[in-house]
Image 1: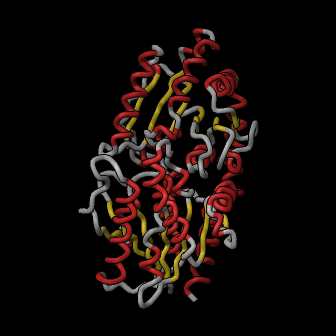
Image 2: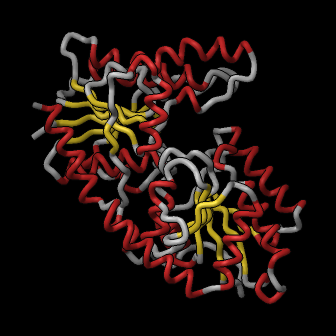
Image 3: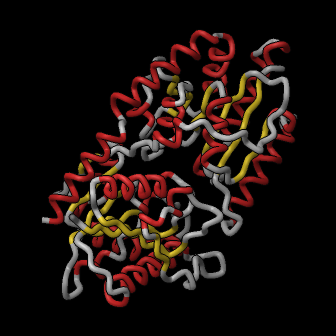
Length: 402
């Protein structure tokens, strides 16, 4: 029985956290002993599964700063993960066979260069060096050693996995010195048990009298382009007769961490935009909802809007399709692999007019909504099943452990 330790920077709410939990639970079902080590785990803001004792969530290094006067998040993240790895290897007394690490590769030297080097699987959601802009020479100078460190330490992994063919291509183009590596694709899976259960009556207030709810589920971060959903709703209003418009409502539900200034600022900006476009009564904002609330929202929505461009993969479209909801998404990145255009939803240029055109088609045709919903459910079950994810991951772990 293999013993697997997961290293993850912050076990909050997001696609990366969802994948780590699903992977740990999948290996536990296969008889592996699993633990998750992280620098931060807020029990009030996390997926419910992270509270399960079988996952053995352990924290180390949360006393280290997340930033320095609002700057240096990348350096602090690397230092926090280095401390977690150091504590695990040298101070915890834990014995393990394989380490599953994701997001921050800076800790890999501790795992590989210690007296008893560990076998490491690194899961690359997306190269971190592409997630920040370098508009100034000072920022480029600051990022240069971090970018070098990311590439060098990623190369120390015994196996590299990515979440989509899109990310695999970006990985090859970005990490030129790692051209000898061909990362395998391990698509994220869905927690079908959570999506299948009938949620209790949610303590959410949605406007009465509305029949067509467009739902967006994404963190309140600018890169998620939630402005697109609000502006598309504004364009949609001009395209519909008043009777049809009166049925429509937009729900922006997203992860929100008050410790992150961007979350606070962007949430306020979106509310202000809705006011400027005279849509305040037509948009509901929900912050940091629970799993049960998410299932409840999916069950009452008519369509899910997925607005980020060049998203690495995106678990929300899969959740929507499994819930028999068509998805309107930007035509780039991971959604090109998960959504079938005009079959399970629409892949559109990320512009308000293009999104509004697709939204209008679904408003006017209940039959189309139902047909796309059924096609989406079938696609998820055939292509992105939890069984396939579990079997593929378990094979990787067995290979590394022996």
